[in-house]
Length: 453
Image 1 (cartoon, helix red, strand yellow):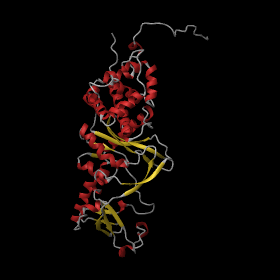
Image 2 (spheres, one colour; image 1 turned 90 degrees about the vertical axis):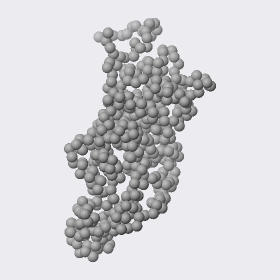
Image 3 (spheres, one colour; image 1 turned 45 degrees about the vertical axis):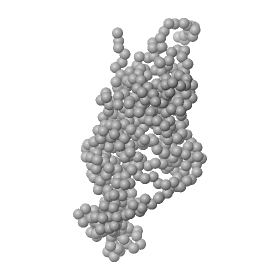
Image 4 (cartoon, helix red, strand yellow; image 1 turned 135 degrees about the vertical axis):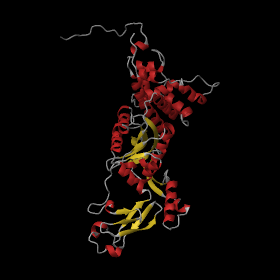
């Protein structure tokens, strides 16, 4: 039976409190119960004058407004303010009444530029929320999962200019140089002088004219964009333990050590670290094993040309420091390069009549060259560990932890692209987004529900 509503109660007058209109299990109630935001006052007290100027907007309200934006995936502060004006739950969370005036959308950006821009405020907020989770025994940091994701920059990918820039110094550079010279001395060769390593190397990049601090990122022929990289580390419960933001053209592996050191400083040293194939380098394997951390690395297929013998077909003899080919010929050590590779060469007079020559090398002088990194043994050890049952379980958790975090952040919290520009603002977005994810998890896991009287 068709029913028509004949009563319009838009002008109905009732005595009611805002608290009664917010659902008992709404997320904002859970967040409010999970953490006391008054700690923010202490963090910002030196940023405000106690004697001069007009009364400020409550800094806790400002930060809570940002948390509303990043927790509920609202695309901008302008849109967030529009939502706060009509959403009673948001008003309750901010401490506003029915008729309280909501701050202008530019208020947060003005306070950021004048007060928060050159501070570590958002990092401190991130780690304070993480500490709350740790105090409640929710953090499980014995296994760490590290990865990065690209966030599309607010820039036109067709507007760029080509520039020559100096190659970045890698975190392990000094350690590698020491290892190279030590290896050369063991083989009776002169160590490289410092200026040999310090030779300036340049590379050509495409720099956005809209946002010069972003990076031109190329994944394949279809994926070319201006982006930022959000590097993050998560525990096995999906809590983000640390993050670093870089331009999108910075390789994942270069940020591994700085990020892991951040995690160790704040959460302690893990037992194992799981990463994807982009991090499978001799330097990372050496760093982890030397620090008594088990590497959980994936299988990577050999990159040898089809139809040619693969590197594992040549046996390395550690005692005599040489390689032995499938036909029994010895490839002897020749030198260690400044890039950190030991070079082993075969005897061309013996190779020219070898039945496997066509599968071995295309060299015109019939000489086979094999390069072995000075830290290759650590990568081989990591490959051996890959077959242990525990290592397989740890690596399998990647998709349930760091990959799941990135998926949620992009689908539900607006991290697929950004409207902000510059590394400092993107670092703020990363800190607030991951803090919101941690806070949401903390709130849901510790929520006991309303008490029934």
